[in-house]
Length: 125
Image 1 (cartoon, rainbow, N blue to C red):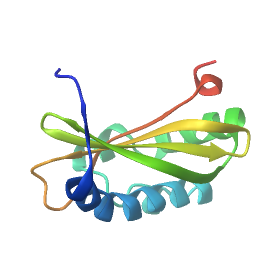
Image 2: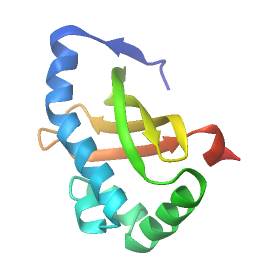
Image 3: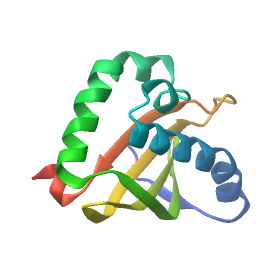
Image 4: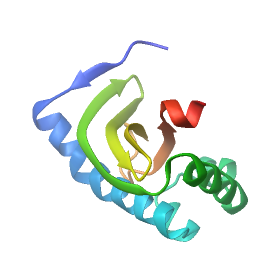
C-alpha cells in the first residue's frame, strides 16, 4: 500500500462537499441507534461486513467506552491510491480527539462509503 498524501484546495473541497453530509448522517445514525440511517451510504461490501447485528455490537461497545458522538472538526482529506479518505478529530461524551476515518473509492460517482473506522486510546483499551 502506498503512503497517503494530504489533498488540499479545490480537490479537498470537492471531496468534503459529498463526504461531510455522509459523515454527519453516519454519526447521527450511530447516536440514534438507527442502522438504516447509519448504513444509508454504505457500499454493498460494507453492508455485508457491517450488518445490523454487527452495528449493534460495535455501537454498544463504543458507547460503553466513550459514549455518544458530540461533534467533529478539522477534516483532513488524504489520497490513498484508488481510495480517498476523510479523517476527522471527534468529540464523544467520554473522550475528545477520537479519530474518525471515512473512505471512498475515487472512481465511484455515487460516493458510497467503502471504509469506516473509529479509533482512540479508550477504544483500544
